[in-house]
Image (cartoon, rainbow, N blue to C red; front, side, top):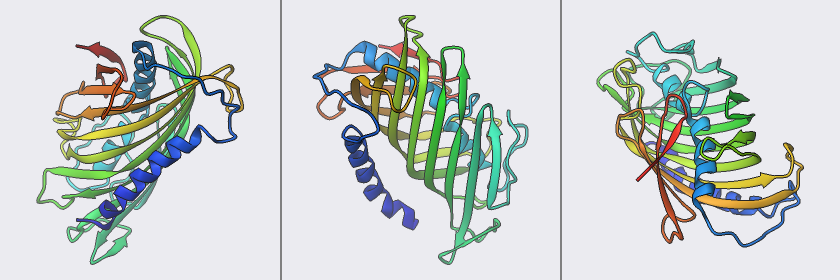
Length: 278
């Protein structure tokens, strides 16, 4: 097991604390009022999560595809220009989002700049920023990932990814469920938990297994500005179970352990479109 896996529990606890402390920060003039988690809340949050995930729009699915391209025996012909496969540092743009990635190929406890079949795992640190221009959401996106990749040498057909991610999105969103619009700011922290990703992306472009667990803080703003006053805030927890399909099942609640309400969706990892599910 790689050292970063041992660090992850601490990182995830820290993420939860940061999500909590955000509500107390001075970034916004926050007005705290009681709120019951509703279908509308879930709809709005899931629409933003879908955009932030979408491979076509430069969302966090790019983490997984670009990582496959940094290991050997990866197929060509992806939908966007792939980063160099054996270089430790890489910068590339997908749609309106620019990614900067550092790959460290680790063996004997030491990270190296180029891949070798001696590599035991890969350490990936990835930052991205840019703009989403979806017909239903326009906004600024900030993304940071820190994860490890196991099963990297040529003997394996799948990578196994574990690590932590933080996202922020400031947007003007037009609801696909109701038709109204809102100014929104979302902070979220999530984990990649034993994600199995095929090296043959041409045949299996979506995670074959594993899960994602997200803590999310949404603020409904009075204007499209980080300094805006806040109409209300909503907290949510989201769980995605990957199954190799383009549209995995997603569960969202205010708290998955003791929920006041639970809702289910399908998330299209390619386009970002979300639909309600029974």
